[in-house]
Image 1 (cartoon, helix red, strand yellow):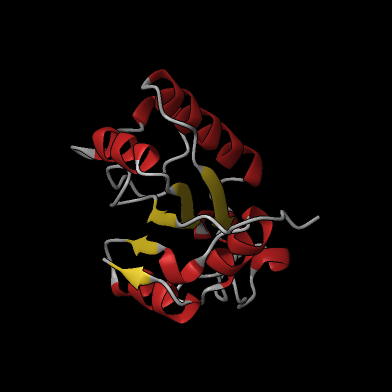
Image 2 (image 1 turned 135 degrees about the vertical axis):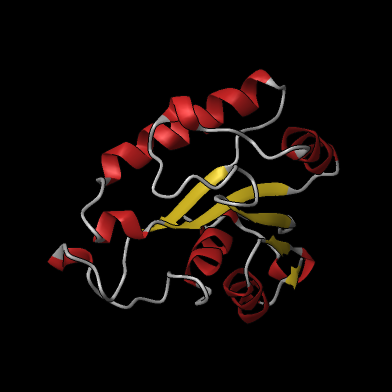
Length: 155
């Protein structure tokens, strides 16, 4: 069901290397570390009225390194840390696909894998977000391209 009323601006944030320290294929909550200033930035974005949405490629699922259940534990840990800091937990969107994956169900190209804008478009539709007033923040050009393709400003 679509949400009525004005659409909210969002800040889409890449998870690994942007919001969190990049530990390749990490799904162990005890190894999750937020990047310096990340929690403070989330507080500022929350206070400014932005909806925060994590958008992350998670090819480890397609490669058979971990399952989607483990990603749920990562999401819950992020939510707990952010909530404890007094900030509304971010929405969490991930792409488990990779065309060269080892798990056939996930070994596909798809419109949600960055640099494609699918995750941003899905979040915008589900959360009633205004993409023209939104930002995509990431650490690689795939993040920038996904944001631009979705109609966001990018950093």
